[in-house]
Image (cartoon, rainbow, N blue to C red; front, top):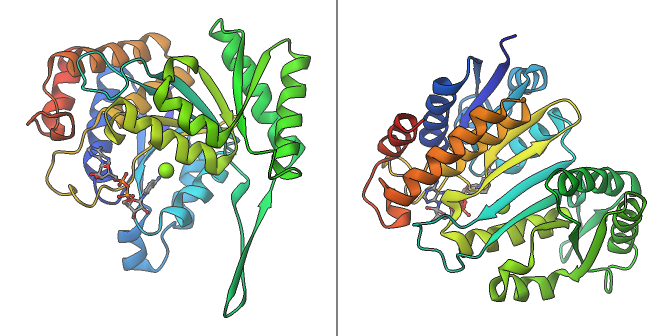
Length: 325
Ligand code: NAI
Ligand code: MG
């Protein structure tokens, strides 16, 4: 069977790193790529950052590779995560040999709740002086995330995971999140270690080796994974997967990088490793592993893009990855 992969470059460096990752996928698998549009550019042209056609293409595909959207990011990525029914955002952050990292011991994975929290979008302007935001936490979404986390650590031979929350202050919402996650873990015989998310933000840079898998609410996962990016050499290295029950979307953690867009020097590694996650998700474990090894080898020996101190272009790095496959 030839799987259909929806490909959305989006804006800015999305147009550079996504074609690089597609080249890598073409070298290892026989997919049918269906290109679709989303983001600022299509919004300017049509008034709609996420055309219905794109939503349908993503919903119907076996998986999606997405780059980034600019100012319209929230109008694009939140509905697209919904289109694939994603309930968890998997964000691995690891340092690579040969890359100058603040914390070379860093090797952890964030499992971020992907549908609710403060990103559920219930914001209101109540008066000229007052805006409010309703934070949404359900037991069912927290339990679904926890079930995934239990499978995730069990498959990897780990005893348990950390749960980052702020239930000492947000007693009802994060209290519900914490209780749901820890009871599912208990039922599955998986250990949980609770950590308050502000304390976690201190402990992570001081002792990243203490953490393997961290389960967290939506906003916390977004912010803390960017913090982890800073420990391993920058956003050019962080991949992510939005996993649903029978569909998934893969994207770098970074945005459109307007400061370097158009120069052809964006680091494609985050998107190429996201493509490796896509391969593994569809059952092509050997191909996914081959892509990871090729990226590791290129990061160790070069060529490297300027964000990692090199002088290579996006295409030269992609070419080097393909040649090592
Ligand atoms: P950003 O991730 O685009 O850039 C932050 C910094 O990281 C910049 O200095 C950039 O040059 C660098 N960087 C990012 N990706 C890189 C790569 N592949 N290679 C080398 N350097 C890289 O975040 P920023 O600047 O906060 O946002 C820019 C735009 O992106 C905004 O319009 C924002 O809304 C959008 N955005 C979209 C996201 C999405 O579509 N999922 C996620 C985050 C931001
Ligand atoms: Mg972010």
